[in-house]
Length: 212
Ligand code: NYM
Image (cartoon, rainbow, N blue to C red; front, side, top):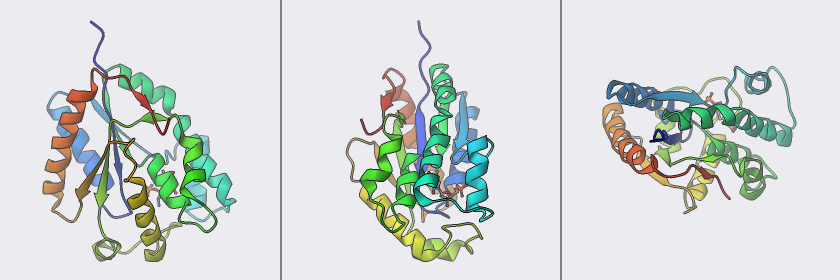
């Protein structure tokens, strides 16, 4: 019998919502329960394209806005063969940001619409679930200071949040909103429940194509 595929689980939300912490905790919990799982994050700053993106985010270089949007997308596409291989081998992938961050961030810039921003990511492996860690910009601001990177201002993050709220209305994607203002442990429990259900339901289903 062919091996059951792993699930593609994506975590999204504004900065400070706790995505990275929750991705790590989820991978740990899945591994401890004997389920193969790995974390990946976007941007993946280790590749050649990722280094261009990283320099841009750190304000060490400037890039034209459309160009950087396409680089973020290319950075996802270059990982697709590896992602598909892992999923086919039965490894669940827990992904810290995906195409939705791409769209929510770029479309917060003047002159960009959701529709244009979605185009380069059409056809990416479709997540079996996207958990949206919902946290108001006011609560996010209370957690700690924003860093020095590009986009880390409350005004920009509010615009990003509004774009996420538009994206989660899309019924073609399996969105699950999570109240990220709860304690780390409560959020983790919530996420684990959804993830285990998703792993069970998606193992016999074919991997879909995003926004197609
Ligand atoms: N970001 C992330 C984008 O603008 N577009 C994308 O496609 C992705 C994946 O990069 N502020 C932004 C969101 C973040 C920044 O992410 C870096 P992180 O998770 O802080 O390394």
